[in-house]
Image 1 (cartoon, rainbow, N blue to C red):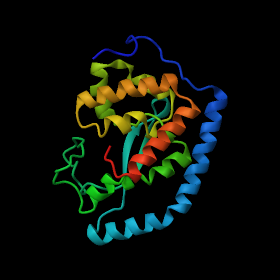
Image 2 (image 1 turned 90 degrees about the horizontal axis):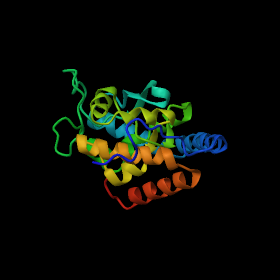
Image 3 (image 1 turned 30 degrees about the horizontal axis):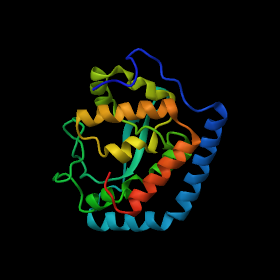
Image 4 (image 1 turned 60 degrees about the vertical axis):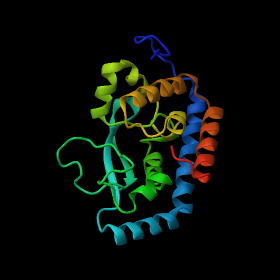
Length: 211
């Protein structure tokens, strides 16, 4: 796998300071409006989760984000409680027996990601950006490609080009492909590219395509 840049070459942020300010203002507005408009969907999902599973609704998991600082990403819980009691992080798989009754549906339609609007509102995340990862997996990725830390100069996102085209990263090969795509995004990102990614994401969700 050929790197996009040399391992020790710094990747500069493709956005200007003005573009970053506009991006943040849009994130704030979109997250606030999204939480209001989608509040009925939140209530329905919460009711179904309580009826079918009786466990906690929101799952909080530590991820590494902007400037390398940890934060807690929020999702509707799709895996059974205590599935990581052995201390080893688990990856979601299609036929796993650690998925809740409603988990596959939420994942397939990306509804489990809705609480991340709160992460976006408080500044942990952006609508578009590299998907944040757990330190457990970052350490493994950096054994293959130390450029992962270049991603820390931007806020992680709820969606990205890598998410759309590389899908769920359940193997190291996919994680390294995602990293290459995310590095390319950081270097060439723009407001226009963000709009393109959001449109592509919405289109795939509406068409019911898995990614």
